[in-house]
Length: 224
Image (cartoon, rainbow, N blue to C red; front, side, top):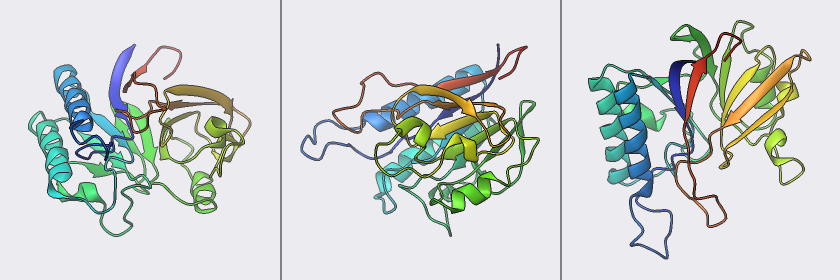
């Protein structure tokens, strides 16, 4: 396999996820630093799949930690791409626009990343996401999303979309779901489609598995 890029999502950068346990501090920052170090060591670009920040209104430290990581990628001349999740979503000025290096993927067409064609969509409400999924360019190899997918949730809670809404694409990388999981289905054209969720990079709830991951996406002779 030829590595193409690193993908992670649901960083939820903040001082700590546990308001009643203030001494549990910095786990999201530590995980983010490890991901950046891996990218730099292996000379790989990074795609951030939404919920990079925990909330829309932030204190200085999460933004400073985010910018530190982005500056390390810039110093190594390694590209960073991102979409927005629902937690930090701002339609006018995405939080990651505080730094000049990362590139916002939402509705910006196709990106060539080491020979693979990638596009991305910010989190969108139900109805809007179906409309944008129907307009995905036929040449897209990989779609980056941050949605509540029925294919992950089944009949639990209110979902926003499902893989049969996706046109043309056969590989989806998904944020929002805090579990590492791969599902297979068919897309809107009836062709096989696979969706991969890396899960969150640190625990956000006591019910989450404590084992956390990011993905290295690679090119094989038989596909991605």
